[in-house]
Length: 393
Ligand code: KG4
Ligand code: ZN
Image (cartoon, rainbow, N blue to C red; front, side):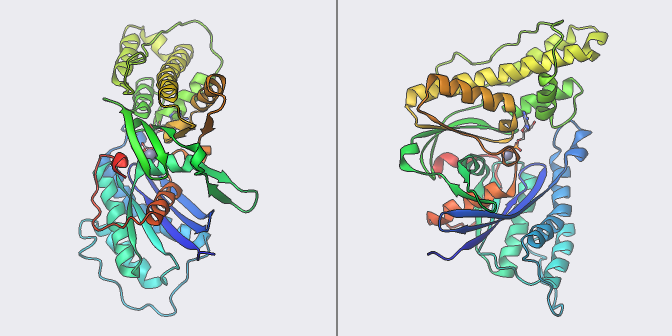
């Protein structure tokens, strides 16, 4: 049997500092630990993620979160004697606070038995991505462990293929040839895309948003309705409450009938704004109006996503539909897509990640890294970028 491999996954593309340790032995994946430090409370005030604040928080959180994942996996061992402090001046010259914390940590603790370090290199907010990348580079250089940059969207997509085994937190990654071609719907705060997947590591983008992502639309509408940040869960909660029927709001379903697989959600946000502006201040604040608007906006987003997905299932004759990304935590979207798919295409397999693995996490990065590593991919230089390269993987 192949020796096992332990992979550290580091995710800092947006407002979560998320790390995980994953062990892969043969076909078995075991999550040794995962931790995240969320910055939601900080960004809430601004109604969205502020890149420079996110960068500062990642600097503060990375070392404590690393310590936690190592501890949880029983891989944190103090050095017998503190041997010198590693010089991280060049690698972390722009991250002074992180530099101090990491130097101190590295002088105190032994190198853990990690075989591969992986980090999200794109897409995401560049200042936030750079902190994770430089942190990963510093760990890789000090511990002499190989490093791989990962596309965030590939991580979101692959977690949908995890199938839990009966025993001790272990999983298999489904990839039987008969599952392909597959269609992947990725919906997050930064992306809305439909991808065709011919097998692990072979992707083709067939449609994406021309403006706002679906998650961004949830977040902006929630801000308008004073529901706080992140908007998706807040809107979903309001939409699920009992409706009074007092307001019948009809929003557009942008691009639902176009022949392509692109999306557009900025018009939907504007339509919400127009409706909101014409209401009296009393109505705007009323719980029944907010609930009705939340329900309609959620339904409009779901209708467009589902309609385009089903059209692509038909056109491309796929065998599987996968979903990934933070918006897939939306129960209404998951259930409705699953039900309609089963009704119209009973032979097509449906896969969505477990809810906690939908939003950003370190496990998805470690899994994508392992897949890339197995396929022989090696990173020479890692650059942060706001663009995905998943179609070129
Ligand atoms: O994938 P993710 O964690 O970060 C990005 O890569 O962007 O996705 C975050 C997005 C946010 O826009 C958030 O509002 C949305 O996912 N989201 C949801 C739900 N939970 C998170 N949207 C709708 N319903 C939810 N339950
Ligand atoms: Zn994401």
